Picture 1: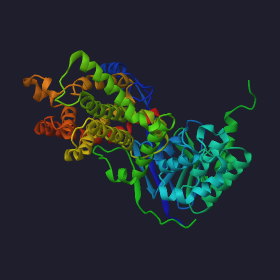
Picture 2 (picture 1 turned 60 degrees about the horizontal axis):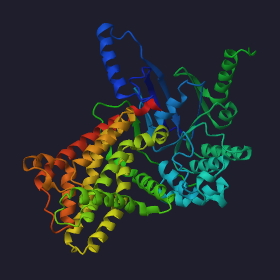
Picture 3 (picture 1 turned 180 degrees about the horizontal axis):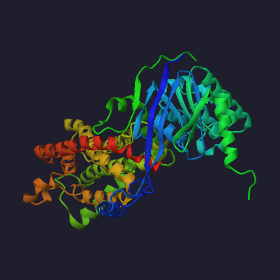
Picture 4 (picture 1 turned 90 degrees about the vertical axis):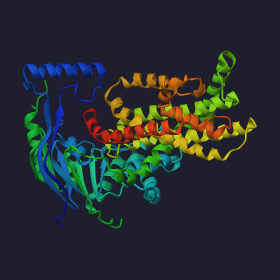
Length: 265
Length: 280
């Protein structure tokens, strides 16, 4: 029960503040060219005086054992999503490494690749393929997915005619029927109405306690407490503390309360 | 759920190495995604149109009609003894395929930005799926072309069987340019303007509504370095008895160049796909 499925070692991700070197907002060629000239001029004049980069994540090291559920907490911009994105291979780190044992499925957004003109049924297959499920697997789980989503009557209706709630329910239903042994989840717990939220929460809890390894980013401390065995508190791109979920969540809440003054201006 | 067979393959996520090469096995492993993206694009393109998939044929056909009237009555451009509508339709069909495949392959990453920002898959699937989608359109167009050819009373020839080969070559040329443009289009808005300009110029230089014989002798060798010239010549030669065969040597030289371009482009694309992260 102590097999390590994710090993994160000294992980760091650096971003550029300089808009010319980054990819957004889309610069025009002219801007890029003038940026190039500026930079060469700058490097002739006073080289390296300007700090145009920052570390969104640095010196992050931890292990995840098989079957563990890890909550990742921290304030906005702390680097939680950056960490998840590196583990999901959307971005590459600049230093360190992460070792992932087996297939990791990422749920950074539900309903990814849904097309409004396609029917619910068609979108289930499309979304399944996007998430890396085999067509045969989707076919096998199709009934369970539709059942869970509670939209049987509308499964052959184009998704653009769905209400927001129906859309979210279908998207979530596909997501939780993925087969991956490792799940990366980013704040998707709040889906649909209260009753469906409860149901999806139960489903995630079932997945988490069913031997899968789950990494979950959330601001909802009560949910992290309920789901996670351990928690990692990330602050300013670094691990501030980690350990048993309940106590780390407590630490974090206490610090947040201290930081924000009780009386609003 | 039964305990899934433990996939013991270890994935190492580390900074981009200097010599990281594209992982084609991984591309192959995700071929179902390629299939579904193609299926989605075809489905979406035609499911909302009243005439549906007929547009794949109507569009080049109407364009060919306009060109036939224009170049037939106004300039009487020669057509190698082939009925003008068939001669022009063959050129237009191949061209439209090429231009669409190139444009869509180049803009694909921009279009799928949302997907790229939230999920990993080999990014090369996007430009490849653009080309494959256009192949489906082209296949329908080629069937219409063959019907037109027989309607004009032209003989059915065994060389018709070479048509898919020329379609493959045209897609390959489109992809080899597309993999260079796709990361650039992601980075620079300018490519929204450069791309139509390029396809315009390429259009006029590709023997679509005129035969290669109108090009002066001394320029013909250079002119034929444009692979679309050789491909369109090849298509006409396969279809029409009276059309001369393509210049195989020049076509081979040109295709070799684009082959190198494709390999280099895929290697570069593989590195460039990791540079988009700052736009997410």
